[in-house]
Image 1 (spheres, rainbow, N blue to C red):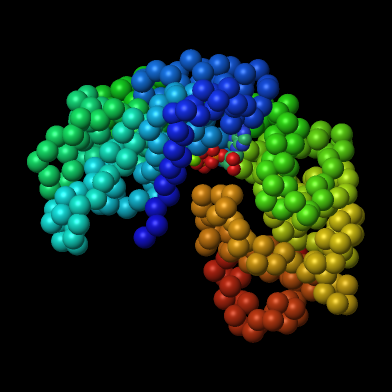
Image 2 (cartoon, protein in one colour; image 1 turned 30 degrees about the vertical axis):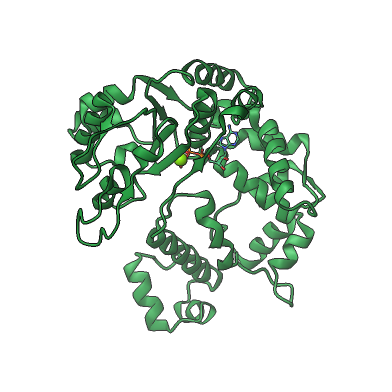
Length: 379
Ligand SMILES: Nc1ncnc2c1ncn2[C@@H]1O[C@H](COP(=O)(O)OP(=O)(O)OP(=O)(O)O)[C@@H](O)[C@H]1O
Ligand SMILES: [Mg+2]
């Protein structure tokens, strides 16, 4: 099994240079200037830091920047408590001696030891099981660990940064998170602002992310965002924050490479994540025609020029940008929208709608019952 680990070893001779180099945190809005100031103050201390903020706001980046500012010579080690099964988390953190349990055929170092002299980033700390929370508290108090199955106390030079997108205070109230550990970990709490709170940073973020994109694919021409496009991006509410913005930029690279993106393109082609609602085929066609992504439209039409729905293949990169998806709910929503659209397009005639959907009539009736879809009222 492959777990998410990040190890970056900054040699001590490079550290001063590293500290002078531009911050990993991009953004000049007042909220980000304040965040960078906090990171600079807390970075060199040994105080545990608790990063909070919605998904995609950049907590990982802030954790890495805290490590960079710390000038500690050890590595940056990250572990995602939500991504590792509870029963394996302890051995991942503490390591084990040979023979500690069935399958432990050789000794293994844990993440605490790996991060000695550097920074340990405990991501999604809210997912740490209660039993392990007590052990973590002990480590924080004694600065010592013992490998599983070992009897030797190891003194470590530890620095902890944690992150969560959950409200850990509420978990403390419900007894799901130890209060003493929470207060210890949150010695220095930092809230990372949402993209909505700092939408003035959007142009700077786009520029920086464009450079990163071009480093990976130098032969691709970047899209150009017009003033209208920037305004449209600033008016979006960004539930996925900077991760969603990166996603939108990647879509722009594909659909508008080397061309100007207008405000209308933003709302109709770049932020449009859902299938259009029920409507006649003419309405759907008009909607797609209005979208001016000339080459893009070719990929979305069949040889007869008929509009095609988004390709399932487009979802292949979903987990590059998101943590999860409600698969059943998402597929159910698509089924509902398409069945309703077919019924409406076929004047409410179930047999014709079934034909259009390439389903048997009885199957469609069953699905309509299950999904509680009414036949549209045709006046
Ligand atoms: N200030 C920033 N400067 C540059 N890139 C950023 C910034 N904030 C976020 N990003 C980019 O946005 C994406 C999401 O950031 P990150 O993984 O740090 O979010 P997160 O807050 O840890 O989200 P989650 O809670 O889902 O783990 C990454 O690709 C990251 O590179
Ligand atoms: Mg994260």
